[in-house]
Image (cartoon, rainbow, N blue to C red; front, side, top):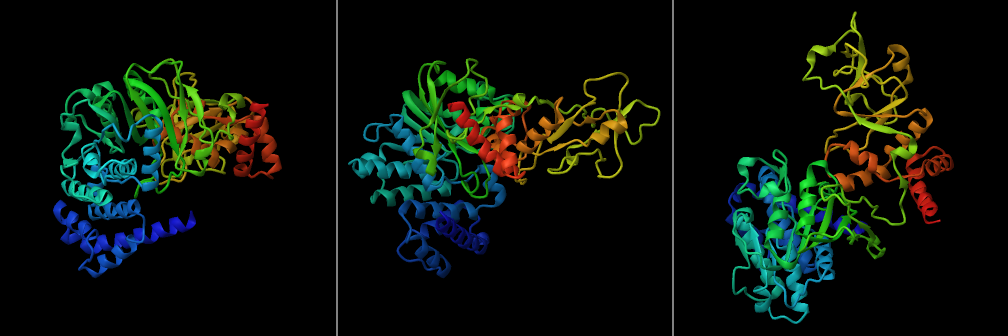
Length: 535
């Protein structure tokens, strides 16, 4: 694995260097395609490209194609790359996703396929190779593969990549240039497979009214629109296989999407991808693989598989669970490792979680720099929360304390043992879960405190149990579990209450054995809790 990562790093560095030197000469889609097609020719006139080409031709064909496509994306400006969400599926992931489709019943010999976000043809090229291996002729394969790609240059390049995979000239345009969301598509495909673009879009940019089936106004994501399109394009009994952010599984704003998917057919599997970093170029994204069969609504009695995709744990038997009775409810949050199940939640620690109270920019008149004669309590901001340090109130500039005035008693005033979490984190932060105990001196001095709306307050009658929960929340074990089911920068109170945790006694015992090292203790406690559950 380390050797593979080293090769990837070297090739990426070379691709970036080439892209920097060619930026001014590759401003059009045709110019970008020309550079990449040059890498497929026997000899390159450009010395820098020739050296890169020699490195690529020592790789398997799927890896070579991935890096040629990656160079194309690097020739795009960062703004265009983000707007088009031009991030290619790595070969290992493409292969694993195709395996899931075949396991679910896709027939390589008889069924046809559509990729509405074809990109660098990762899925179509992989399927082409599989079809050839099954004995189909290149012309037969060419008439089973179909793709749509919004970038004209990438469309041309991807067709050529498929030709190289087949070892033959395509008799038709397997991939056409266009916006799939605006293209009429017949529901006739045995498999619709895609790694669709991600990112929120405005209502002005949306075509038609299909978004209402799957999204809330003001929270329309491209991948949700492509999900709706994919089910529409699949024939009855056909498969829909999508690589999409994990946020759809439990995010509060994706209830319509969950309900829509279940209304369209049976959910067969939801695969988790463990290697979060480096899955897509310049993107740190938590993703899942959805596998569904179009038809009657998903029966609540049917078990859904939750496998691990593209890792050494793939051989481990997949967890199987039912989806909740309410179609819009959050889907199960099983661990990706069946041997590491906690079986507890925050409630087992006696901890209550609730969102922060004060929205300062809506009630600025209540925000004071000194309490004066008012009935006021100190305000804890999200930036006051630091892992490993007691949380104390400090103003937005980190200096003087801010206060919030009250005219009467309020449950928003915290008067007992408490901890505070950051509710919104930056994508560049290594952790989503950031919590700290509130210094008891805060309540002793001011008889209570309040927090702003970008925080979550954790309360518990037992301060030791609360401190135990905070230590656990701040571990990578818990953070990874949360990321896999959230996929957003905000912490959902509802998801926080549901996240799988080891039993309190198991974590406390493990913490003692690990001499206070919470990371080591969390790993051991999940294993210990699983043994207790099995026993």
